[in-house]
Amino acid sequence: MSIPKTQKAIVFETNGGPLEYKEIPVPEPNSNELLINIKYSGVCHTDLHAWKGDWPLATKLPLVGGHEGAGVVVAMGKNVKNWKVGDLAGVKWLNGSCMSCEFCQHGDEPNCAQADLSGYTHDGSFQQYATADAVQAAKIPQGTDLAEVAPILCAGITVYKALKTANLSAGQWVCISGAGGGLGSLAIQYANAMGYRVCAIDGGEEKKAFCQSLGAEKFIDFTISKDIVKDVVEATNGGPHGAINVSVSERAISQSVEFIRATGTVVLVGLPAGAKVVAPVFDAVVKSVSIRGSYVGNRADSAEAIDFFSRGLIKCPIKIVGLSELPEIYTLMEEGKILGRYVVDTTK
Image 1: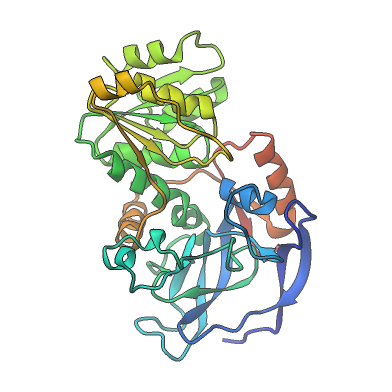
Image 2: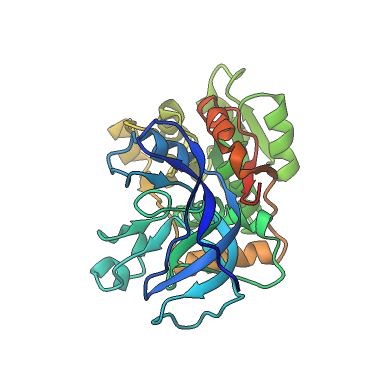
């Protein structure tokens, strides 16, 4: 395949600085890396944090963001195995890890101290050509719609891992806070596919209709509810067995600890900067509540999440825009106006 010397990308030089649509060099893959011609990239709320630099982990600068890139392998390093030019591949949040520490050996590669993160410590998928460690890159079946699978590479894998972390049984209730957003809309579908009953929390009639169309059995509107904890407990006949917090509301996270059913599991996913979990110790002890963090999935979780999608059980509601329009999407994320998931077409 013919590989150009330069490409279009969205780059920022400083945290919070201008998001520039500009020409940059096409990267050369290292010996362990793939070079992927990115066709589409999903846009994640984490991209907003990377741009702002408001997390305690510093980004590389300048930076090309993005970590939901789906495309075609066009070149590879000399040590790469089990890939060939023409394969479909995905750029995930976890770009690479050491593969030798205790965490990597136990399948917890995302917790590796040397983890390399796409769109954060490694230039990501808001460009036409990106590199990815061949071990961590996601294998995508031939014939897959690359625009629709792009958000699965982070949002889908993340919520699927969170649902596994909740350790629920089919028929049990799971409450999803922030259900109408990009992560939440996928969490509803994965929960349904895994046999769980879904209670969605979000605000407004538009998001209510959206969540119900995806399979939410109950919907709690935080903009009109006078007592969210009471309403959730009533809707789920005693409280959900699991709570998945994908919202960035600190209050919503604390409420999930209150409404969770005895012996239930609260899973923390969303990362509001500087937020803390507030849990009454007496209630948490007496109810035997578990509070667990869920980061991103490992290679097995990623393959499973993509398989759900490939079997037609997950459909990500997407809006496709050009790469050059990405700064406008950042503004919408800042204003909390995202419904579903945006995907950028790198050719525009």
